[in-house]
Image 1 (tube, rainbow, N blue to C red):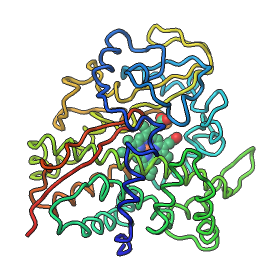
Image 2 (cartoon, protein in one colour; image 1 turned 90 degrees about the horizontal axis):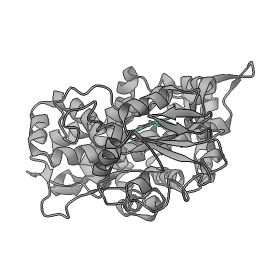
Image 3 (tube, protein in one colour; image 1 turned 180 degrees about the vertical axis):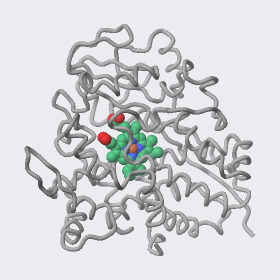
Image 4 (cartoon, rainbow, N blue to C red; image 1 turned 90 degrees about the vertical axis):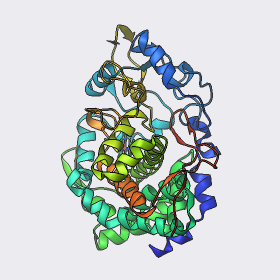
Length: 418
Ligand code: HEM
């Protein structure tokens, strides 16, 4: 990991700044706190016609290029119970888009868009590498080394913007490490995974030689798991094709690097701006796990995911015609007062229960235990190695921004150096 020093901070900043062009199409510059609107909408009914963004005053572009499916009816769901109803009813609400659009282009190779048996079979191929007991494998193989190598680069400085120098790099280097991709190609990979067209040519150029090498000689990594996996399609058992493996890789990169980056920043800011919780966690690390879980409830980085209705139905008293797009606002559901007392308060001591920070139902986040391991290892190490870690009051005060992907503008901190 000594090559970690070769990571160009300016390049990371460009690729990991919610206000940069990379995030323009996902509402990265949206500055308003949407939670008062979530409450206002939920108070008049759990389900509203329309798309989440415009309903809370965001009139910029949609998630990818423009609002997908402008011709279809759209509905948004704001309470916990109705979100769960939709997630659990795979016969009525599917993940595969029902109309042409940018998502449909990926729907044949990315399991996020698969449904039913096909989704189960593909997910089962990699599930074994993502179960809780494999958390230690991820931590020992990739996470811990990356975390400590990064802290080595700034420990003597006494101040840092952790958002870029730390939070952004850890998940990217973890996923890339698990693919056998070195630090030098990690930023090219990140750029490819975030580009509007999801630049498969760059991914293929970097990953195909690794896939071919692992087919010859498997190692202890995720690409080796994929090359050895067999899937039964139409009664025939076969190895995954290179295209299948690239689809998996693209999904893991897209789903696993940006999310953990932003959630780590959100968790750190939650602690830094609630100093009594920061002190409590510093003194008793058993509180770190509940603090991470509470941050996922209180401010999940991905506030919304969508499903597609395949038949006429009804939700929360609202008629939903077949073909509708149903946006599940996990962020609003996670502050549903019917489920949590004082829902707007960041309170790691609350009896938490299940939340929707990682989604729910069959598509519940595959990488949630990896994400938890990254967040835990990273924050634990910061508290161990940076004495007196606190918010840098002299820096521009950080804000949580973004519409469809939310995260901090910066995580400026200072600490004592000896
Ligand atoms: C804190 C960080 C993370 C958050 C908040 C998060 C959130 C989510 C959510 C809400 C979903 C559900 C999407 C839906 O229902 O349509 C999801 C799915 C997924 N996530 Fe994560 N995620 C995180 C980290 C990761 C990591 C680290 C990985 C991989 C190493 C990962 C891989 C995936 C995959 C593969 C899926 C699709 C699962 C499926 O379709 O069956 N995620 N994630």
